[in-house]
Image (cartoon, helix red, strand yellow):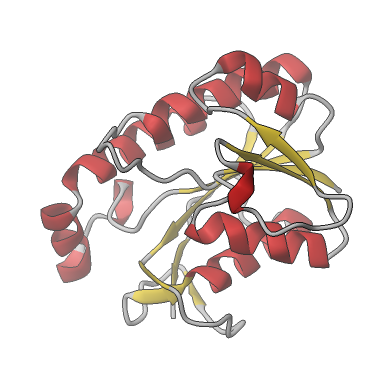
Length: 199
């Protein structure tokens, strides 16, 4: 499958690139800083800013699916997820690409409940507000979307064992989030849903 990954050099994005490549997908990695990617044979790297609609369009054209794993920026700019995702959605509609999987966060939308959700809003309010805007854009897109809401992200190794639909203990390795996303890309079990992931 031809898949483009936005946020390819982020914590989850790097795992997505590595795992998708290992599964034999034709991977396009979209990033502002290609030097941060490990070299992979036949990996296509597109340098660009997700806030640049023209660059996003070039990366989306000809793909079978799109994965959005955008993070915030060191500058504190909290519009990247929502405005970048809006550019991705427009490009997908323009180029006829239907399948979208996007990483959001536990605590957004109807997952904003319990102690973990409350704590998330205390600590990450601006980022979660941007995720709220991002999710609204995706839900209104008319695309075949899945929104993934992981709990607290860690850098532990991939386990392949995680809970879907429940926060579990409130932490999950980024590598396991990537594992779930690539399984969903194949199985399409959560189209038009926003499952929570925990370990």
